[in-house]
Length: 71
Picture (tube, one colour):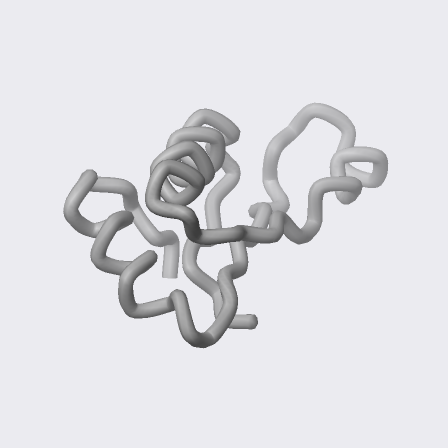
């Protein structure tokens, strides 16, 4: 798995996941449950991961749609 996106913006994550799903690319969201520790501050970013084989295509999709990768 490779890191595709790191952000505190839940709408960017949802948009990215929808775009990837539309292209048949599976993604996995990490750090979802850190909100229990941080409250509602949104200071800890969530990470969107994709399989190594899909990373290049997924990265192009994210870049072409103007989503900030956060890294």
